[in-house]
Length: 314
Ligand code: ADP
Ligand code: MG
Image 1 (cartoon, protein in one colour):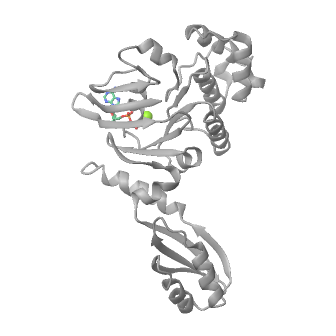
Image 2: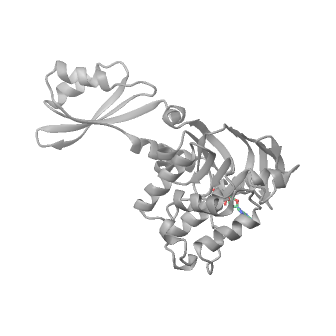
């Protein structure tokens, strides 16, 4: 559906994008993850035709943005980092205005009603945009991007500045969009991306440093994974038994919790050791109180990687 090929973008001496390429399949929800200044907005602005690149091409559903900007833009709904809202309009008036501006061919009232319902603005149609909270304004921006039912939806940091409840709602919305649209959305927060998308691209300093299915990201970034185990029993026995599991690389006793201890278990990526851990604890008659896979370590990994590629800066 989307093909980005060898994009390079320079602002004076700054190379914001350094020869990046990726494709997005129809119906895929792609998370575009990277720290501030990584080049996320620049990429999205180029895909949507807002700015041009120095080198490279973008093709959306067969049309190339430079060769046929009008047709290509019609295939994309875009929520930029700062949505272009008119504060003195009501929600409905604004959507009608954008509907006309985009020359949408669908039945106007029905289409706008449907979108308003979809983004949860049914009770806000008559409110002035300036009187809406940040979360509701974001929904208006969302609604604007959905006008005309474009096959591709691009969202630049749609959850920035929202409270946790609003973030969960926006995440749900993004997931539901994925059923009918091809979606790219960016964030600098790993947990937001991994909760909502099929595939993740990590960008840092204008370069793609990982491109993987969400559940494979860890394997791609590191050949180790970590889990936390809380179990009752003699710590030396438990450590010894865990170390017998072939995939286990190392075991560290973390904290005591009454009769139980917490252990950090590092093991080879790509393996699932939960059953082996269970069986090991059964063998030595030590009850498991909790077993947790370490998503935190993925967060750490992401921070480490994006820090590293920042090189000499700081
Ligand atoms: P992100 O959206 O990931 O935070 P951006 O794409 O906004 O990153 O920025 C990438 C790099 O390009 C940054 O170093 C930023 O300072 C620079 N940059 C972005 N826009 C401009 C501009 N209009 N002029 C000069 N430098 C820019
Ligand atoms: Mg940005």
